[in-house]
Image (cartoon, rainbow, N blue to C red; front, side, top):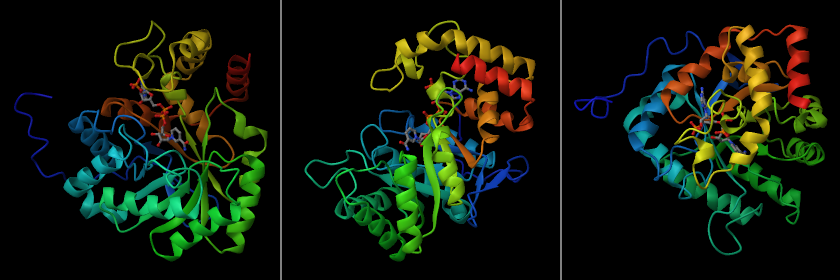
Length: 338
Ligand code: NDP
């Protein structure tokens, strides 16, 4: 940014070429097309973050054809602040484009004190979405997720709450996140009986984290539900930023994040070997990690995070080479599972 930067005061006009490069994939067998790369606001959009940078990332995303923004009640910090900042940016920049956007929120993790601010009760889900809508200044979200399974609340209650939220017009579609294959099977049956459009499962999935391959992807295929893969870069590990140590300001260097230095050092040899494979393909490691996910069964979109607009610009180049040879796939498996 320069001292005389005017981007904050000049009205934002979205790029006219915003739909030229992005690919859009159908989520399951629904009517919804999602950008192959979506943007998540878990980190870098809270009150602790630089508002101007958050705005710049969102503008860049939309200009690149990223139409899907993923939020949750507790994104920040502090909780709620990512939705509040997103609401401010939406009001300033994106209101004319509301119908071009697919906006998500979620509830399921700890949000407010007392017995009604966590897990999966009808009481919590309905109240939380009402709060999220207020914070974002929206009448409805495009998709509302139950953020994680709750073993103590009957699944029937949680799914009925999702169905009623759709019937009240507060969400157009529903999703679940972090549910196992078995839990997803039960949820899908209930939602089918309730005639609710259940179109997405949000699951952690990357070259390093394959748990979804042990049954979940098959269940999603059976029910024609799409998968949106979160933490596709293993929170930054599947990039080249940590190869020469832990840079200041990176997620692993910061406090209050879920990427610790030990995870970085335990995996760095694999990262180096994977980066070699990426370079042979003419890609950076982050680009290969995204392209690899887009080749997996049921994956409709890869949900990335970004701490700068340049990271997004770099990651989007993944779409230029989505094809893998059998040998490359084998090598990636060997390195990551070895
Ligand atoms: P990623 O794995 O994509 O990690 C993103 C981070 O990687 C960035 O913030 C940045 O971190 C680093 N990075 C990205 N691109 C580059 C690059 N080209 N070069 C160097 N570093 C790069 O995803 P997240 O873990 O952020 O998760 C993405 C989204 O998924 C979240 O925002 C949220 O919406 C969703 N999510 C959902 C969960 C759920 O339970 N449903 C749980 C977690 C996430 P740095 O700060 O180091 O620059």
